[in-house]
Length: 71
Image: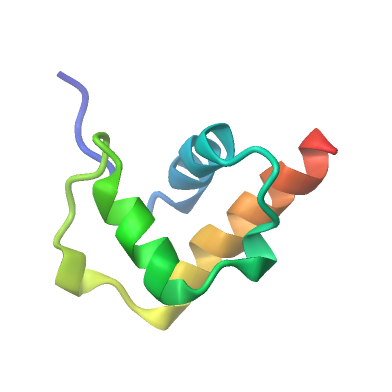
C-alpha cells in the first residue's frame, strides 16, 4: 500500500481535489471546508490537528494552478 498523504503533499492533494471538484474555483473555498475535504480524502493520513493556515494556503494555491490549467 502506498504511504498516505500528509499536509506537506500539497500538489498531490491538489490533484485529488481538482479531480473531485473540476469546476470549483479554489479561491472560493473557505479554509474550514478545505480542511474537511482534505481530511476526508481516502488517500490522506496525516493528523488533522497538524494543519495550519500556511499548509492550507499551499494546497489552495496548488489546486488553483491545476484548476487554471484545466480551463
